[in-house]
Image (tube, rainbow, N blue to C red; front, side):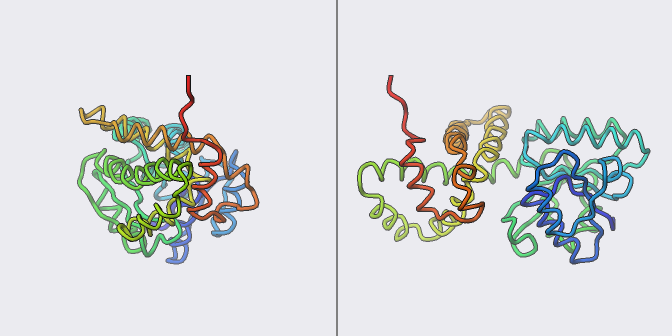
Length: 296
């Protein structure tokens, strides 16, 4: 597996590409129909850009799908069609934040083309893939993938069943996103009551590790709240499907969707993607009343 296709090089995708390129892998993608932001990421990472998904399938030994949850099926269909047209069948790795039910649908799409499939999830920050990210994988091809790419991408094999890695992503992501949602709700109220500073200081004194994590998590939400609300919908559907309570997951989904509805990254372009602090996000949410229930 010396040539890796990445569909598509967003925050995480282009960071994964950087690591692979540093270690001598060839990395390819296509940008047909993609945003200017994705094009910029691909150029910054030095990814080779091909003219179509078909060209990626023809060139790659393995294809990583790293996209928002709602696009997972569509990308799988594009790759399956290209496999059928070219006769080339690279390993397809779904590394998206989707439910086990969704990943089984994606597997069926890929399997219909004759290509092998791997369930995966990436845990850790995109800004430090080599140092702090782990790729959890499951499925019949898991050991082969770990041997081929595990030297560059820290890889942990969960088992040989499709669905294990996607379930792992779901239950992991619920904690950090739930903490962000809870903080947003509580601090919006604290700002209204007039004791936000005191509350933040109290949290920091009693829960220093939690607040350190939130200090770097919360500033990413002006850009990514909509996608993370989609991930929480996938988590809620997973828990409900297997007979577990999803009350906290549904609440987190609702709160993050309200944050995403403000479209803060678009409304405050001067701050860009990385120009926010936790305090600034909290203050804007309080000022906008995003988490205040309307009275009837």
